Length: 141
Image (tube, rainbow, N blue to C red; front, top):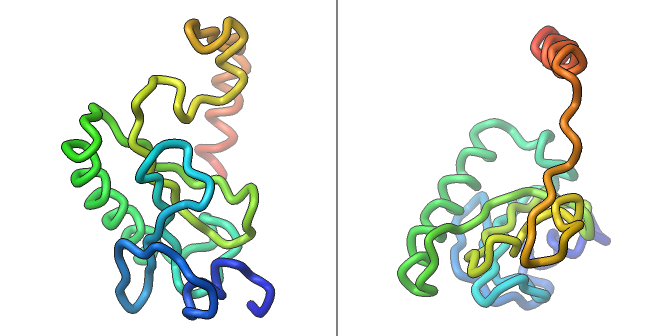
């Protein structure tokens, strides 16, 4: 894709602080990190959403993210490293790999009604509604 920022990075047309690369994927540091070391793992081929990724490619991205996480834990002295897909700012599937120094480093605002020092669980849905949602999703799978 000509206008895709991540396609330009994957093609070498834009600079990036690369930490891993093979024929199919590329990992590099996020320009606007949540924490030091925050990395992105992208497929070199353009796929807009993570659910568009071929299963083998999604597995390759996850495996790379796991390898990065294993290095980050001792490097940054953290107990956990988060891995998630968002696709909010760039329409090219990408996994974030973030060393978590604080429990809320990657928390949704829905959990922060009490501020950073607290935790507010969003309201729980009634059991019957949860069962209906689960049945619908299960049947569609």
